[in-house]
Each structure stands twice: as structure tokens, then as C-alpha cells.
Image (cartoon, rainbow, N blue to C red; front, side):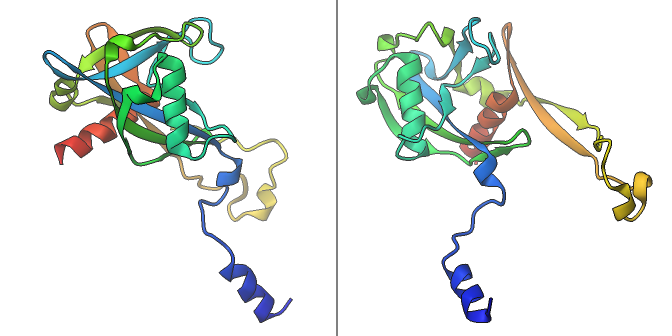
Length: 205
């Protein structure tokens, strides 16, 4: 190893988020539709037959597959599959800030307009029902935010003898903000609410 070989490796390296190769990657769509009283945000209620998070409220979306060209195409594909619409029914697809979940996920959210919403035919295998909420509701009502605190529990064979302080080491505690929007009898929370909150903040700027 010499300086020239080190330099050549660094020149050819494209920086990314350290450890992101081990993350699961998901794409999500925030669907907007025009109704008589204005623009609405469309939500799905996950089918009760699903193994993960049955009955929870979410946006269309899912894991990015190898055949997807990019994150945007994955979000479009998932929206088409879950809502039973064709590509022509989706327009004005724009990216929001991507998110890194503490649970090993990278989420790429997008916003799109759904044209001819009467053509929506939800996939019953994934979607139990759909509903909409006026966009103005979220602009006028801030989410409730609650903290979840994580407890540090090193495994039994953790090498405390190698760190200053040993078993009395002053670990940094972590907390997660959970967002909740309550609309009528529906609770919109978790990543869905956090993505929604980010979108609303952009609209308020």
C-alpha cells in the first residue's frame, strides 16, 4: 500500500451514508386528489390479512425492487398496484426529503396528483379501504408529538473492560418523536404522519 494506491481508491469512491448498504429501501407516495371542496390527501387502511401492520393507516408504497429504475419509479409502481390505476392517472410526481429510520430503513417519499380518482380500484390483498382528508385540515391542525425513549442494553458478553467507565459508562440516551394526526375517528401516525408533517411544512413556507 502506498499513497498513490490510497489516492486512487479515494478518487473512485462515491460517498454515501455509511452503512446504508445494509438498510432496506422503501418508496412512498403522498397522493393528492381534487374534490369539490378542494384538494384532499388520500390514505390507505392496510388489509387485515397482511402480516405487517394490518389495519394501520398508510400511504401507497413499499420496498424498492431491483427492477425499479429508481426510487420515483418504485413509488409510482407501488401506487399503481395498490390503487389499481394506470400510469396516466398519476401526474406531477415530486420528491420530498428522504428519511432514515432508526429501524434500518431508508424511505423515499414523493407527492403526486391522482387524476380521475373515480377510477381507483384498491387491491383487496393489500388495501382494506381508502379515505381522504382535506389538505386544509392538516394545514390548520398541527400534529401531536410524543416521545419514545430507548433503553441501552448491551449484550451479556459486551467488553466493558475496553471502554472508559466500564459498566458505569455514561451512554447517550435516544428518543424518537412519534407524530399523530387525529381526523374524526382515524389516527394517522408513525412514518406516515412524519412524512405528512414534512409535506405540510413545505406547503407553509
